[in-house]
Length: 217
DNA sequence: TTAGGGTTACAA
DNA sequence: TTGTAACCCTAA
Image 1: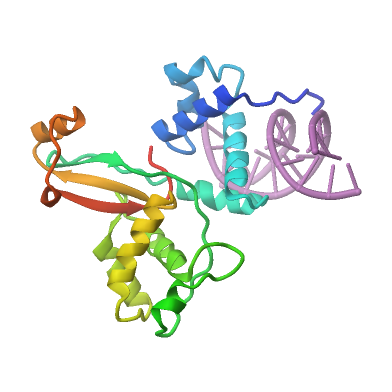
Image 2: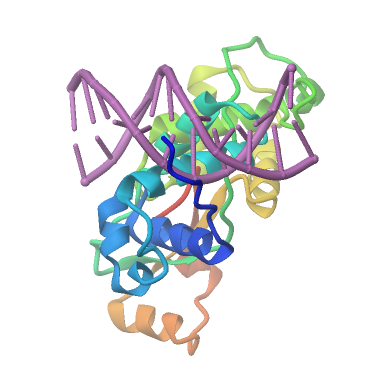
């Protein structure tokens, strides 16, 4: 352990983030072998990548706890697989880490109480429940609003205007980066290619929005 | 090869 | 002295 510490450069950190986005968390060897990244990361081992990713998640969660980093890392493993010719994920509109706070069933309470801030953390109770729902549903391509709503209705006793609240909250969480909003375009392959080339903007009826916790690869 | 826990170097 | 980041060790 006498080796001098080799501080990570911003280029290396960027390469690691790119690698994780591309290959997924845990595929450190694959990231290292990526021709686009290998030159930047040539002085790093797969263990270095793993450790750095852990540290980066500690920083992001601002908790200083390795345990929280671990949960963050675990949650980033799910990745959408585009194996359907008639539907594809076109856009990931936001991406950020988050934290999980305990969410136990509660009795029916007012919308204000659902939305009330729980502690020094800025998360509301509903935020946590939504995160828990998406996490537990564990759908590879994320979960649709109605699926999330059904889960919460099964597990909890939401207020009458819950559906409206949920929509607003999902929008908030996506815009703040706590959730990833994925736009899935239900269209033939040719249309998808036009979308990718930005030559065709799908109608609202041709798209659906799925919400996902964590990062894609 | 990876995850997770432990250790050490370093900066504030 | 303390917290953080980098590095090391080991089990699976």
